[in-house]
Length: 121
Image (cartoon, rainbow, N blue to C red; front, side, top):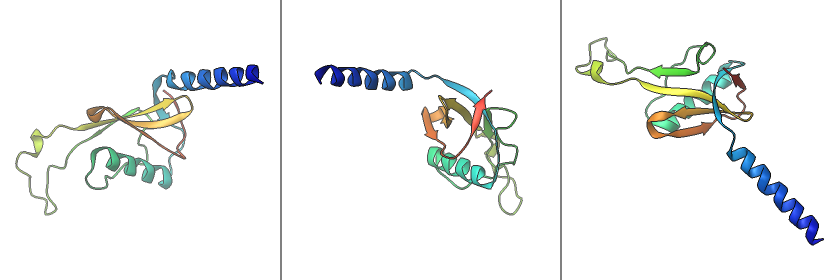
């Protein structure tokens, strides 16, 4: 019985270590639909805060990186003073093992994207 417990413990520890050792790789989406877009939008809000961003239907299909630029005009179409000085924000779609994550380098934050499928780039 103790041998069984010892073997199971070693298997469990080995399994956890292999998950932790999985490296993040740049990824591309394998499917884009309104649910995937909504998941990405919520992940971006969770990472950086602010308002809902508009994403193209082709987001993360050709490149693993997304640069969000701040609007340079207000709701009336007038230029916002100093908006050109605000840096773009970068997000990277990654795959760790079989899990897609959205990485936000500014905060060194990874957000798990449930029900989103991707492949290594």
